[in-house]
Amino acid sequence: MEDMIIAGSGPAGLTAATYTARAGFRPLVLEGHTPGGQLIVSQEVENFPGFPEPISGMDLMDRFKKQAERFGARFKMETIKNVRKAGDIFEVTISSEMIETRTLIIATGAEAKRLLIPTEEKFYGKGISGCATCDGSFFRNKEVLVVGGGNTAMQDALFLTRFASKVTIVHRREYLRASSIEVERVKKNAKIKWLIPYVIEEITGNKFIEGSILTNCQTGKKHKIKCHGIFVAIGHEPQTQVFRNLVNTDEKGFIKIEAGSTRTSTPGVFACGDVRDPVYKQAVVAAGYGCMAAFDAERYIERRS
Image 1 (tube, rainbow, N blue to C red):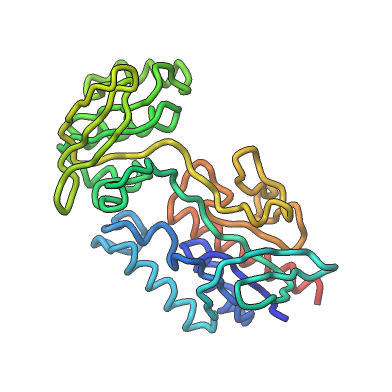
Image 2: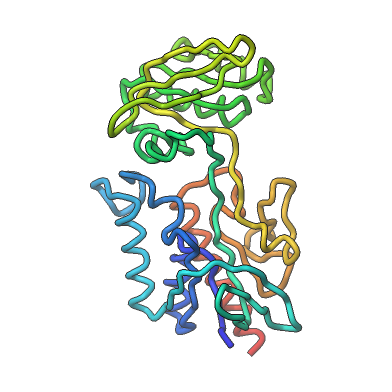
């Protein structure tokens, strides 16, 4: 019987692990298939408090983990296959066994949706990003693409004009899902150009992105464009599939929590980080909610002791 299982090992999960371990609960962290979460693909992180010099996402998450381990957190490179509430406890099934726990903190994150083209994996974190506010400053005076037609794509394009010399919005349809207000703001910005209806077929470059080949969705005509960065703004997929019979989620699958807390619809289950955040998607915000989840879980255990 575990007091606490934490699912996920990004900024939220590891912060929760540090706080709960420091309080003496010795949490078991199920790291998932990618320990450290999405942040590990970032070559440089320069906006996390306390690091005046850039640090790679992998190194930053390694420091998170070592801190949690120092206080007694335990780790397994496992992913939850199933979870079932059984009275006042939860039965968590992983690949090798079933573990009982009094509380569960869900910090499995949300993955940026991908373009699903062959050259994408090569350049992910080396010019391709799912977060303009995280990585925009790395593209000062460079040309970038923003893929998408919703409000997030419009907002990302406007944000990137603070740094990039040129921003081109690429969208596969003639119509946009973004609100008319957002579209009008974009149209007024001289730095922003449009390629509609186009899709990216190939990304070119050596170590980093140098350009892209696009296809017109109506004519099939190819179009080459110079670019140094591609920001994919076609949505995020919260990693909540295994939990959707356990807790309430919104229409996109993000876990709903009580206002001002990390409590879910199921007592004893808490959610923190991008798995419950469709808006900010920042490491520092995730870490803050990880701290909150730790306190909420501790209080739940103490009340039931």
